[in-house]
Amino acid sequence: MKLIKKISYILFAIFILVVEVAVPNRTVTVEANSQTLRDYKNKLAKLEAELKQNEAEQQQTQAEIAASKRKIEQISQEKEDIADEVVTLTKEIEQLNKDINDMNNEIEEIISYYQLSNTGDSAELEYIFAADDITDFIYRMAITEQLSEHNTNMIKEYNKKISDNEDKKVELADKEVQLNKKEAELETYIQKQRTSLNKTLEGAVDIKDEIAANKKLIDLYENTYKCKLDETIDECTAGKLPADTAFYRSVVSGRVSSNYGRRTYKLNGRWTSDFHYGIDFSTSHGANVYASANGVVAAIFKKQSCGGNMVYINHLVNGKRYTTGYYHLADITVKVGQTVMSSTVIGHVGGSPRYETWDHCSTGSHNHLTIATGNWGTTFSSYSGFIAHNINPRQVVNAPALGGSFTSRTRKY
Image (cartoon, rainbow, N blue to C red; front, side, top):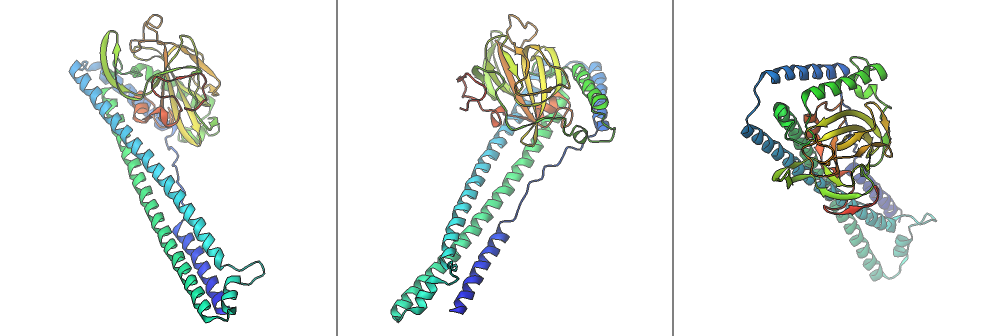
C-alpha cells in the first residue's frame, strides 16, 4: 500500500508540474510612447515647412481630391474589418480560457479521488487492498486504471486547448501588427492630401490652425508642466492626466443619427457618400456636451468649414491612452490644458445650418463623437495622425443601435 501511496503522490506532483509548465504566466507589456518635447518641436517645424510648400503649389483638381477621399475611406474600412477580426479572436480566446478552467476543475475532482483523506489514509486504496474477494479487488483495480487513463487523457486535452489558445494569441498579435501598419499607411497618405481635404473631410483642419494648436500645447508642456527638452512627454505629464475607468455618451439624451463607417446621406440638397469617422448623437440645439471621460483638453479648433467648433481631449482609461473629439459645437466652454471630468460641460450642441452658418458639413443639430487610440501631442499632433489612430467609438462607448434613442449618458443598450 505504501508503494501505491507514493505513486499517488508522484502522479499528483506530475499533474501540478504539467499545469505550471503548460500555463506560463504571460503578461502583455505596453511600451510607453518615447516622443520627447524635442521630437514634438521638430514635428511642428516640419509642419510649418509643409505649409510653405503647400502655399507655393497649386490646388489639386476635384478628380484628385475625390480619388484621395476614396483611398482614405478604403483604408479606414480595412482598419474597421481588422478591428472586427480582433474582437472575434478575443471572444474565441475568452471561450478557450473558460473551457480550460472548466477542465481544470474536472481534473481536480478526479485528483481528489486519489488524495489522502483528512486522517492521512488513502481511504479508497485501503478498502481495495483490505478486500478478501480477489474478484472484487480486480474489478476495483480496473476502475482505478480507467480513472487514471481518463486523468491522463484529460491532461492531454487540456494541453491541446492551451496550445490552441497560444496559437490564437499569436494570430491576434499578427492582426494587431497589420492594424498598426494600416494606421501608419493612412497617416502618411492623409498627410500628403491634407491641404485639399480640409474643405471636404469632416473634422479636417487647416494647417495654420494645426500649427497654432500645437504651439499652445508645446507652451503648456514647457511653461506649465516644465518638461525638459529631451524628456519624454509621457514621463513629464505622468500624473497630470486623470485616470478613468469608462467612457460615457457625450450628451444626456438624443438619438443615434449616424454610425461609424461608410454612409450615404443628403447634404445641402445633394446625395453624398463618405466614410464617417465617428458616431452622431442628434439632439436639441444648445444642449450640454460633456467630456466622455476624465481627461485634459489638448486642442481646440474654431469655426472650421467642415466640423465647426471642435474640442479634443486626452484620456487615460483603464491604463490605456485615448483622444476624444467633439465636432459641431455651438460654443466651447473649456480651454487647452484644462483638466476635465466626465461631468464637465465642454460646450453646447451646434451643427444647425440656421445658426452655425460656417459649418458646411452638418444638416442639423447634433454632436459628432470621434475617438482615437493614443494622445494628441504624444502619439500624434495633427488631424491626419488622429484619423490614422481612429477607432469605432462603439468599441469603448455604449450606445443604442442606429435610430435608437436614449435618455441618460450611462444606460447600457
